[in-house]
Length: 167
Image (cartoon, rainbow, N blue to C red; front, side, top):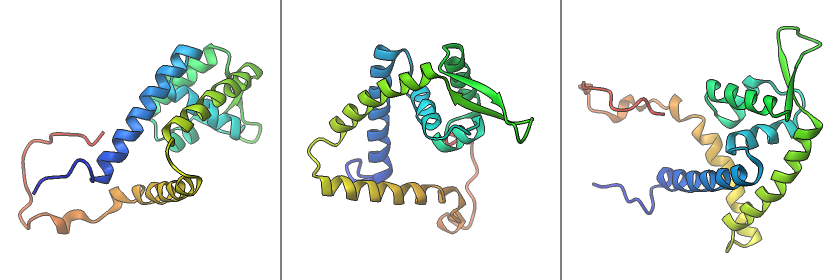
């Protein structure tokens, strides 16, 4: 049996997400000098002015080292600043600067236009259904690593070299 690349949902989701992210990242780099990860960080901070690096890595499912590099880059450019949390001196809170808030507004306008291109051809009802389905898939995806898949493999575990780390 072979996987049908035209109907296998994880492959289709991956393709759409990669194409949309790479395309948007190129546009954001060309227009604003930031990539998709920096845009996502700006977007989170625009919604929540008490975010930390840990919250950001969780929300956008980004590697901690990559998030640190992106945050440092945004800080160097003057788009955000790190502040010590008044309630917990060990915790650093990330906040947009006025320059960062202005950039967020500019990028958001472009992001919404890119979203229009992505959903072109879908009715409003289909977009509503798509959002509902994607929200459900996001919730389901969070449980995949918890799935008891041992019952799916033959009784004798397969041994051999590990081909992929799953990243």
